[in-house]
Image 1 (cartoon, rainbow, N blue to C red):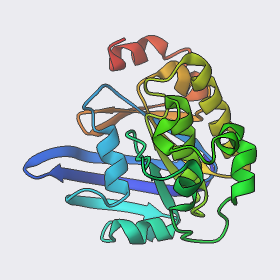
Image 2: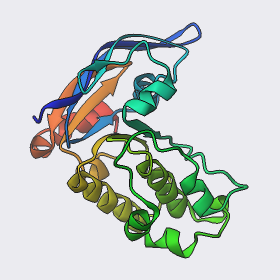
Image 3: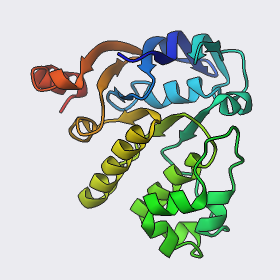
Image 4: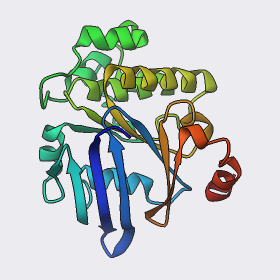
Length: 234
């Protein structure tokens, strides 16, 4: 594996009295695409939120590029170089596509400018003056991903980017993720669809009851397919 950019150790997380994460431990190499696979309620999205400092209570260790983040607030974590694209996308209905793209601040150098984003997502150039929520589901997902590319973040957390999308759009999202990896981004991807995950990821962490129970390299996916089906209940 490449040098670790993200190291998560013994991560615990709570929503109020509900204890959701029970010692999540995994790491992501610089330039890797890694998925968190698991059934609904396994703790995948909560892990993303905990890494980003968006949980009311968390403990353990989250190191990014060697720096401990566990006691930092989410705005400081964003400035360190981590960005999250939530499952609900968070598109602002009152803003145009271009205004949505320009909304997040640049937190560090290296973010893509509008022209580079439009080259990645030609549909967004064509719809730049449209209201964000007037876009199709696939275009909204592209907008949500594109928006965080402006920030300068090196580590992207993508939560269920293919959920509810048509197969042709899923293919476009997959091509985008592969291209982002080639550009130098490191990506953590929450997915339930391991058929899609297999087309983009280097490794897969299987999450169950708020902890990692297995790690499967993508090259070994075929040999572990039956085991993975059991894990995921498919």
